[in-house]
Length: 192
Image (cartoon, rainbow, N blue to C red; front, top):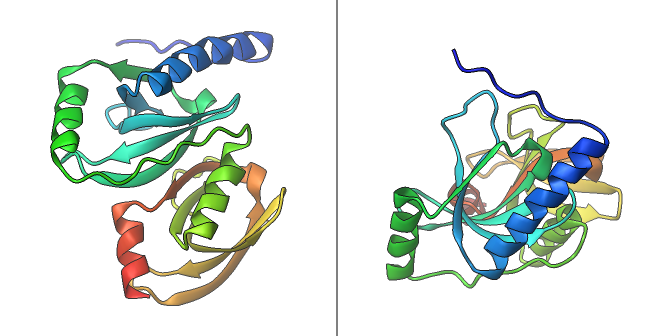
């Protein structure tokens, strides 16, 4: 049985993140397709796309489906990523397919606080977001950004059938995964 290396903490973790940020910045600069593994409970699943935002804490991917279609933007915490692949047969296939299809204009995010930056993008473009809180592994909140400030966000919640389902209020720092404008979210937007 293969043993996994324990995650580093403290100063060593900061050093590891700085090293990884260099790679993310290179992937962003070179517009290189990557596969990112971040779910320790399902080590076979990954997200594929282009890095469009890098901060000390998070990355944002211009996310693509296995068919090479645009699938919104995905924010992941850097400290949850345990494997990055690039220049693989799979990533090259997705890149080739996506270049043959009509492509959404790619938005790049250059601010330090990527969570607030993506929330603002969703708010300004009236997009549905899915939010995971405190590493739950679930989409805890799905809906439209009603309002937000530097610390707090209020979401108008919607069901998968486009029915309004109240509001959710939470601290932006508690967000551990955030997606915006993916296929499922666009379906909700179309039916509300």
